[in-house]
Image 1 (cartoon, rainbow, N blue to C red):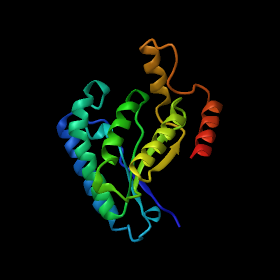
Image 2: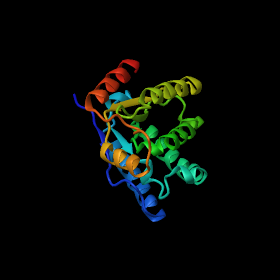
Image 3: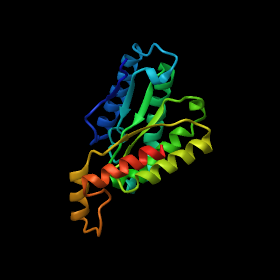
Image 4: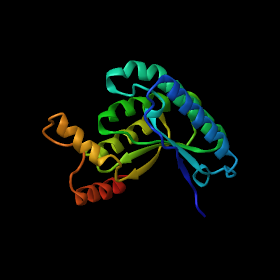
Amino acid sequence: GYTYSYDMLGEAARTEADARRYHLSYSQAITAIARAATSADIRTNPGISVKLSALHPRYEIAKRAQVLDELVPRLRALAGLARAAGLGLNIDAEEAARLDLSLDVIEAVLSEPSLARWDGFGVVVQAYGKRAAYVIDWLYALAQKLDRSIMVRLVKGAYWDSEIKRAQLDGQSDYPVYTRKHHTDVSYLACAQKL
């Protein structure tokens, strides 16, 4: 009665060789997991989560054009493999500073015509981010625009300490994440209701 999503840790490629190695590892993992994808219903098959920062060594907004040129084809290839295998493929969450870039990559990949009528593309949304509800709205609008279904895995969040520290070091006047657990809890419930 259980289904699984395999998260391959080891994010943040430092070099192009790292990114290629991660891409190959993700491809091999999809092939291995595919043996357990025996249902016609993708929701009952296992899936995989991938980190965009593992697929490009300069995954940052300052390198947006390069990221879109180089990372999007890699992710499209992984999505095509997952689709052929009957698996779900989730785009794992990154730090708040990378959210806009992540959404650009997600839109570029999901717009691929060969992925039409595939319900296995997913996105992880972190409820501790102050933009979480807006991300859900954006994903819904994108799904409507492209006539696609998008799986959403709602989580509370994974980078709280580093988000706080980065905002402090940058001298920001506020934080991109909620600073109290009960605020994150409320955001999680509100996002779940929105979903």
